[in-house]
Image (cartoon, rainbow, N blue to C red):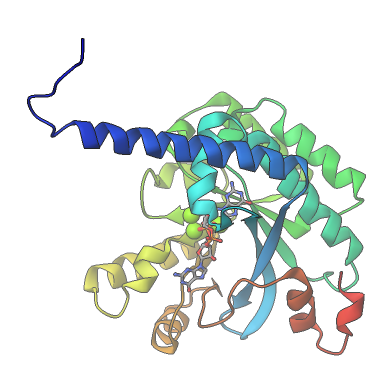
Length: 283
Ligand code: C2E
Ligand code: MG
Ligand code: MG
Ligand code: MG
């Protein structure tokens, strides 16, 4: 017996869903292999002190180039890694790579902070803070040089494990940044109860600054809120001089964006900090 469809309207939809699943499965398989074979790496985007026009640190951004698929954005594969549990491995990998690099260049980076993104799911792991603190000791680094960035999600709400991990990370000396603030599940309560050190204004607001009055109001208020709570304000996605000028006028403390610096290789980052050093010493 052959099945005949009276209406074909749902069949293409099913096919599309299946091919999407197949694509995601393939991504996960290739990602798993490439993690094993150490094929992932990171770029760094400089963070600028907006009042002094000076680079004070950088954000570590995960990069994946696969031999079949080419360059794949973390925005695409991080959510998949979160769904499959691969994220835990991925997070420790990127933290260790960043520590390793920072330890190898501790002289050039003495007054610099490095920000590392983690998934909110990592904070659900009972031993996350403990393992991260052990890693920092392994590389003989100062935790105060590092900021852990996490995007708020619904799992933050009054979760004992999350709260305990954040407290332990603080105790070890790490700073905490709430990433993409102002969209999603952001709550002002978390800023206080998690003793947040840094508030990163989502790029959505920053990019709309010139053509959207509401974005202006929200941005200005997020900056003022940070100041009053003694939290460092960071604007992401600064793409023009006009936007930079507005943020400087409102006393936003730090900024990142293509207009300032694009994400770059760690070697280029070091070169930017001290152009006098030869490229060959930057591995
Ligand atoms: P994010 O942490 O909010 O990082 C900022 C993203 O905005 C980066 O994209 C950066 O390259 C991009 N960006 C910076 N300045 C500009 C600008 O002026 N204009 C525009 N249009 N974009 C700008 P990227 O590297 O593709 O990362 C996307 C997201 O993936 C990150 O957002 C973060 O949520 C996640 N991610 C990146 N690396 C990691 C990682 O190591 N671990 C985890 N868990 N997530 C990561
Ligand atoms: Mg980030
Ligand atoms: Mg962000
Ligand atoms: Mg993000």
